Image 1 (cartoon, rainbow, N blue to C red):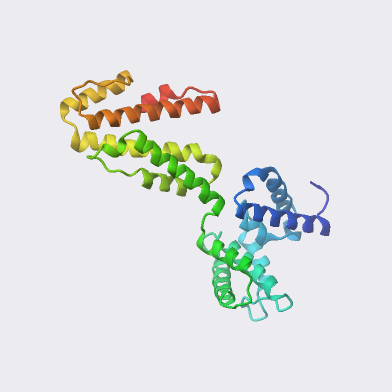
Image 2 (cartoon, helix red, strand yellow):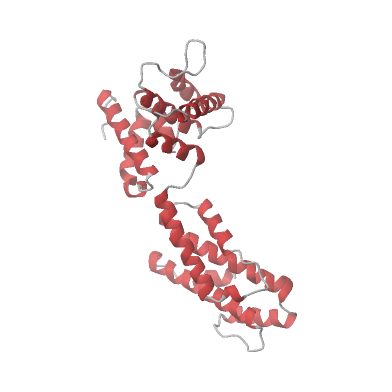
Length: 287
């Protein structure tokens, strides 16, 4: 990247690269271009006054001060201080510009009143534009995507596959036969997706859903289902970390323990494979 004072070429190149980064992000493939994205953002940050700030902000990184933002957004205001759309642009260019303004307004800090003004103006303008029959479906989809925050279809496909895996695990572990406990594995998987949406964190979502669901079942064993003697036997099995359980325990508790034992071990094995560290002793200590 250039280190000299930013000129027209740098600003134009940075803008083009940010647009490409934005498209990659919308397609959920931006994880493959992290280095390029970082370089483009670094260039824009260094030469802020010459480059496209609203596109930069919509990509989610360190941002300038409220005063700088106010200066930039003043370009969208008319002589009377109200937001307006430049009349020199084509209809499609206007919508694209206001769409970027809307996306930038979604990342606002407290007391950034100008961002609230920008959002209100953009929503009104874009809703009116969507009612027009000559608006391209491409721009309509971009606005709906930005307005609703929907996960892209590529990420939805990944999450559907992961959910099928969780459902299969639940069935294969016979946990569907544990009738005394709440079956919340789907709920926990949805929560994991909300916490961590990126496709590369699939292992986290799997482990989170499994362990939370199992923790709920174990909690129900202790609170409502198990007798004092059964809970003592369960505790002993956990301390010994033995896959076998006394025959005197009910089938439901055996199923729950076996699933719990396997999930902890599998998670530890996966961690050791990817990170080279044996986490099983720490997991057992926490348990």
